[in-house]
Length: 365
Image 1 (cartoon, helix red, strand yellow):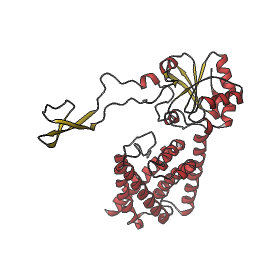
Image 2: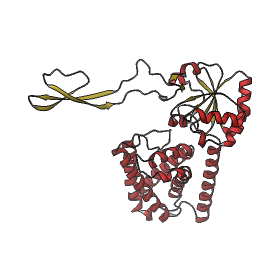
Image 3: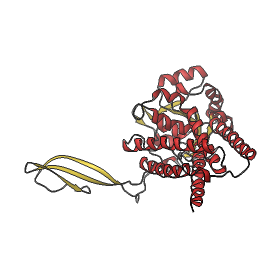
Image 4: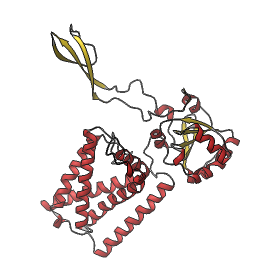
């Protein structure tokens, strides 16, 4: 019976590590943004690690995926069990810290494919911790599935496949797009809340001074009838309501919102660059020719960035090109396309094409 439970735990943990690792390996840039969030001053205060976020992200997700492989095939059992234990202990602490102090709203455990709340992430890690401790104490029951030579071959092929896949998605775009800006999405519709959408539910705790004593009266929203003197009210979210897939998209400039105007364009070429100073120089060289082609085909070419207008003017002078530019939050721009710069073709609010700057030549006008 114990052996049966060990094998079930082995398959579950190994499969989950492979799935979780693959989902993040599909979008290592997105996972690096999540690591930057953790390293920031508001969470772990390890800002010196932020420049290393991307290589660390790639290493962690490949390491995680390979641990799932080694557990399933029974390769390097001592290394695997210690690695699994240390990794899950660290992430259990991290998700607890994030949930308890409400520092990061989504751990990024499964990328954008399966968003988890901080407490859901912590609960998932606690279950994994229990299973891994169970496997740790029953290591002798984890038998190899193949001979050593075959195991080494599987490990080497898995490592090579991970490396090739990571290279592809970093220099192009994620193979699977789980974000709300995938091709075919109508941005305008994705920003709207249906009339019959489920509303959020709150509990309101009203504090009054009644007969010289502080008393709290709870309601679902209406102001309580009391002769007491009002002190304060605290609202507590009981049930989350519907939230549209896109909530932070917009074109803004000089305190004016141009979102509706631009989304209604028949031919819109959108260039995203969350930070011009961090954008790739070769990327702009690749885009310049496409920008000029688009302008010749009567496309309205605009950029969306968190950088200043001065930086854009310097860019125009450097590359001999000019286009309109608008501003948005840096985090929101990072979500649109995993490339800096990136490029999209939008028609009447619908995303028709989306490319990494490496593939800008694939644009069809």
